[in-house]
Amino acid sequence: MEYILAHDVGTTGTKAVLVSPSGEVAATAYAPYPTSYPRPLWAEQDPADWWKAVGQTARAVLDRAQVPASAVMGLTFATQMLDIIALDAQRELLGTCISWLDCRAGEEARWVMGRLGGPSIFAALVGATITGKDMLPKYVWLKRHAPEVYARTKTFIDCTGYLMLRATGRLVFEWTTASVTGLFNLKSKSWDTGLMRFFGLERSKFPDLVGSTSQVGGLTAEAARELGLREGTPVIAGAGDGPCAAVGAGAVGEGEGHMCLGTSGIVGVMTRRKVTGKRGLATIQSTDAAKNLLIGEMETCGECLNWGARVLYGREADAAAFSLMDADVDATPPGAGGLLFAPWMYGERCPVSDERARAGFINLGANHSRREMTRAIYEGVAFNLRWILESVQSLYGFACPSLRVIGGGAKGRPWLRIIADVTGRQLEPTLQPQEAAAVGAALVGGVGLGLYPTIEATRNVIRPSQVVTPDSGQHEAYTQAYRAFQSLYPSLRGLFHTLNRGERTAA
Image (tube, rainbow, N blue to C red):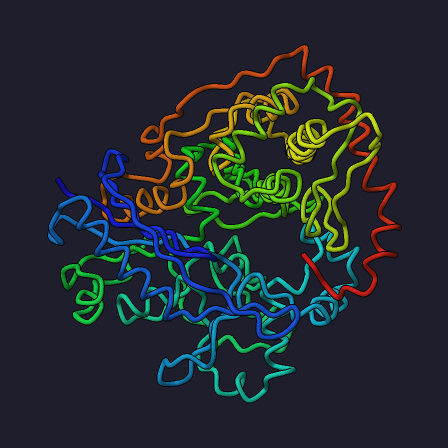
């Protein structure tokens, strides 16, 4: 049997999966790497660590599956997005990668928005304000604060571009990851040279664009040795982890939605429509050249549960801790005794875009215990997801009555039940929810190899593990608490901005 080898190159490590054309995972492997924080608000990674992890995990999955290198028909990637790498004229790294976690460009974000009329007008145009985490402000930051690096930069790439360079020797920028730079034209699938000039950036510093399913080239002899694969093995561009996750969820038809319950939370909808983002919702390029991905991200989703495990239970956020938490939640009636939890632990992007928003328990009384607090955390995240889904429906007409669910949270039965009842949506967790991005990348690679005619044709490869149907009575019962939850942010916004005034950026 032949396989596609896909790597999910994330922030904390790389996961490799060996996937058959029918979507079955034959083997997985994982290798971690560090993130450095050299200054306040800064976060950096060494791209060489990614490539080393790719090689380690590639060899590991071949060994675990007991298959030869000749069984790998193609290689592809799902990658972290919103990162910046500068190369000189010899294609050598000019320092480390500026991570998506990096917040150094807060002043530049405000300058960028000011050039387009200020934060309110900017948000009206593109759907949300931007922060120091975003890419366009970071390009401007480099020009302002590291002019020698900027001047020596021949080419800007990102994680996908670096992996393509190491694998094939070609310099390219993939569409989905380009679409979050702020410099990509979704309609023409080209760099927006007008915007580049407007912000003082040079088109010559950005490489040619390629689609997600493009065959960028074959593995070079050096890359093949490092990965334990055959020279010339086709390398398909792949895509950012979010767009790949939509494919790995099987939600690739028009108007179909998925929900990712990871450290952050994502609601994504595939559509052919050209829509402008609002209320923190953004439109980016999907892996399907004919479709965009309407996406709403809440900054802390599963991280709220992780916090609860550490602080309320004094345990690491692992399966044993979540089992205890689930038992307490099951033993606590819906509504958590009137206790509400605002899940904005690290600012928020959607449904409100505010880097200074913070989490909190509201209406906490002496009658409440750890059980009610835990249930309130589960419900608070669910309320925020309902708010995003209602925004998607009211603004764009996508009802999303059923949603494919991926991420580690897809394994939590009590949490899925709460989310289904709160949102009123049918939830369909996938069979391999934590491998969704890597499996999605493999299917994107399959399109590039001609195994599937289109991205939409991969839809039936992914199957749900179960179906969680909402209880209509519970949904109605939750509505009063949900309306109270919606009033929290406008009531507390002024307080957030007073207390967090000293933070340049945090989201």
